[in-house]
Length: 114
Length: 112
Image 1 (cartoon, chains in turn green, brown):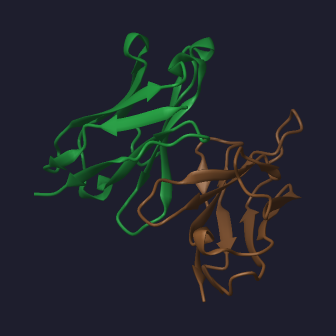
Image 2 (cartoon, chains in turn red, orange; image 1 turned 60 degrees about the horizontal axis):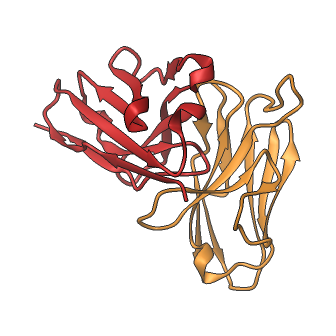
């Protein structure tokens, strides 16, 4: 069974940084495209970014709203995906999910507030 | 960016009755390889989304056959043949043909 477990969320001040992790089991992450998707409180789903698979050199793409501030990376030895978030804004407050579309984690809440 | 427009915004359905959700895209979701990258998800209250339908009409593993997807190019529909209590939640369509991926705004389904 595939499991994705996000961690690293919390309360951070505007302008601060946070690194989210997504630990995978039941699949080899390097073989798969992975996305980060977020959901602001009471709102819909918003795609944040993508990391392609090893065969595609782990290339990445980002939503315009986070480009230049967020970076997706991987650690194959830990079968994990990461989202480094810098220069955080209040509008980045959301539950962040890692997903390969067929599988989703439970999400981790990021709150950006002073 | 491809805009995904879902209707209706909300739906109140009597158990056992059918339900239908529409999703229209601002551009064709058909790629050069002949695949159409339209997905449907259900997000139950307090839960992450779960995949129901992929590539327009393919039910994901374990999804009841009362769920069906149809459509082509820019016009898509999710149908529930007989709504059950466990179908309550918000339904989202997603296009995966072009970056940035974009979701519909969601349709909230409740039971009468």
